[in-house]
Length: 468
Image (cartoon, rainbow, N blue to C red; front, side):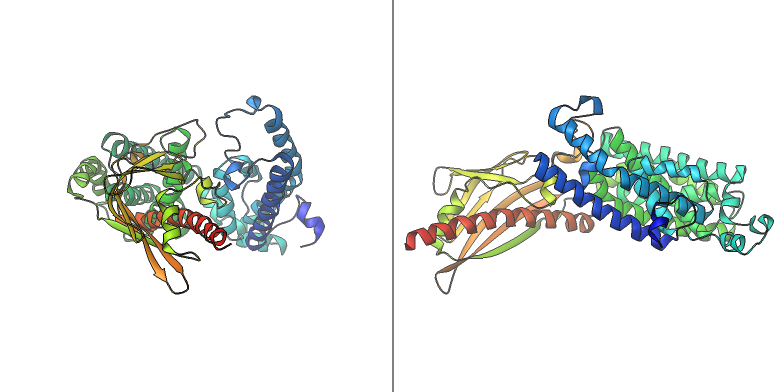
């Protein structure tokens, strides 16, 4: 592709080139914006800032001073990228033989990500090749968009998506807001039923292709996620965590729906109606049969160039930990700031201050300088939801993720060194446990390492000072 084709609205762009141009442009733009924000305006800037640039600011008219200047500067820097993005989107739509007015989706937050993904996967229509070789328009009339643009079939697709989205949204609110149930039925049964339900509506009068069934099956899950975010029921991080599971299950349901419509099974409407009517009861029963969540444990270790006697002092009282640099703790996930000890020995109380509050930890074992074990009697919220609004409190922020015990174990190594191991025992009442444990174990390990690295720096500095 020549340089002139990058900026031209005429011509066509294949899906592979569209993907490559989009990724390169995003990486280039995000780094330019980060440099401008960090080095010229001293403002932290990350990927999520493109949707939520200034917490607590709901309108551009509220921007003042440095924030207004930063916004205008970033807007000016983005103009070439906007031109490039719209031009390539128009070319890609032409290559897919879709209406060019759909390029307005480029400017709609969140929806533009899904739109970009669809265009990256959508194949070039065979009719585009025929058009370039002089084939008549009538020969192209059997293409995908010709079928979808038929008023009756388009209405079926819209009806299927909206009906499944409305039903799913109500089921999600019933399960989370009224039943407090974040279980199998919410993350597995609801996405599956919505994906299957939407495909069966779509194919009720005419058979559909696998691609059409898949798109309609996942669309309600995407719309429900956007609705939960925009209506202040959930935050970005929790929706993104649940997305792989929910989208995967709904896609599986879409495939099943495709094969059901191929068999022309006549009992499908009645069966799906019964399933949807029973779903509220299933969600209620699901919560009662879940049982106690498993006790999970995470171990993290670090080797320190200092003797255990020095490390022990830095474990008992943890001084102020510098601001984190990694992306994780800038998403709203709670992270430790400091720890203080009231008293000494068994019965003393440790207070570990996080960004969302303090863990209150009575000491159970005080074996200096080998083992410090403590229980947990108070748990703050595990995160502050990233949201367009000032503050929201979904039910899962209270009493679902619970830390029960923790400890620091010091092992003397050869060369007057110490292996420091941090351990946390916790439960998480969100199901399926195996899926959510992947997230929680990773987050707890990152919290451990933030504390352990700080202790390492403090202890090694104290050891070097003592040697001098």
